[in-house]
Image (cartoon, rainbow, N blue to C red; front, side, top):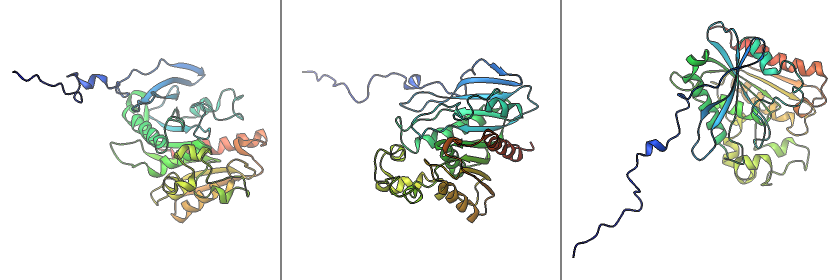
Length: 314
């Protein structure tokens, strides 16, 4: 009796698996340009990464036009408690600006890149950090196509986006052939030490054992129940002397993220002898709520000046 071959159920068919892989974002065509304001070319929805098991991640690119040689880059990281948010939204205090803040910044010289990243309902830390590192690599790989200078990048984020911008600036390896070179980082009212939030809030305002806080949803567990991930995700605890210069802005009346969180990051940077400009915005709440319009503009202008200073030169 002839023995019949038993099929190998684990091997599967002899299909070329490489055909199932998504296209390389470096080789995808760029979106058709729009011109939302004089002097600005907008590429909306360029795919920069396709994480396994997730949606494609996109970025909007606000490019100065005409460009005078390769231009520096500002990467803006949106907030929303790591849970929600739109990549091109700087918050309610800026939605009425015409031209908008990114067009305004691009018209002053640098490109502005606004990326998606995986939210906490899709993936936990460090997925968000991985996404922003992938963006920095994509920017270097596509710098020639886009007219960008990958050696002159400033990261900027507000709230949870400020946390991610700082974490990326502090932990992304710098060097030739890898990610774009981060020359500076700007944070607006960002959490920076997830292990000390209960200490910095008013008594009873933050429960470090609550599994439903934004921080717990990011980490996959309450900060007090996951001290290792909480430390790993805390920019104030990841500072080294190799960190780039920082501009740290925070309102003294912030009810969602205590101003003491920015003070912790500032203290760590100063202890490591990293240049840092810490601005306490008197009376401002989160998202610059309650701040006079001219003071909101001053926060933006400080950021633009920091970008110009640290992106100067070729």
